[in-house]
Image (cartoon, rainbow, N blue to C red; front, side, top):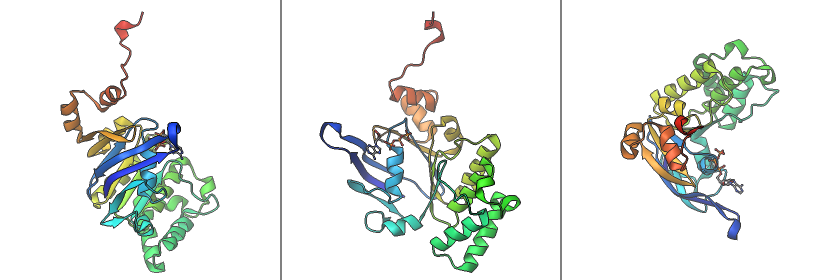
Length: 250
Ligand SMILES: Nc1ncnc2c1ncn2[C@@H]1O[C@H](COP(=O)(O)OP(=O)(O)OP(=O)(O)O)[C@@H](O)[C@H]1O
């Protein structure tokens, strides 16, 4: 995926906010890219533009050479999206969800059946396969949600706070899923506030502040460039935030 000079402003005049400001980055197949930033940095706005849900003021996104400006529907077919808040239909079972989304993406009935079987094995869905999503546990819902996102086997996967609200086991399921996608040569973007998790998961990072990339690179490169000991320290420096020193507290 190539994000090129993406810009989005909201409002007018003195109230105008430049949510995303000439943002450029690339994510290779088989790479996990952490798009990180504080509240209001522009992460969600960026994801919405990549997904073709929000029109940029300028710039473009190319997925396998297909432009979101020229062919938003083509781009949508090439993306799987996982968000902590993305809803499942409460009255559908997991099996029905996969069939519904496979149909929406235009898979043949045979391909839909085969994908459902593969995903049921991959994410261990069979124990709650025919239960309505309303009665599933948070972890089961997240597994159903992960399966739904991958039903059309897209080349690009976007994750927005994928572990929010999950316990350690649920978090590991998400991690294993992302590692599986990496092994399958997907391009993967993860937005999260969990810097410790992103350090474990991501190959490369883009640190966003006021809609601009302030730092980009592999963790070692970022630590070397900034002289900071951790991502948290880089964040604090970027935000001009000085942690309280124990010795300075009376
Ligand atoms: N529809 C909108 N109308 C006006 N301003 C908006 C709109 N959407 C986002 N913004 C503003 O754009 C900026 C970027 O918001 P965005 O939601 O992209 O940040 P974020 O990095 O996802 O934040 P968070 O981590 O809190 O979800 C913020 O200042 C926000 O208030």
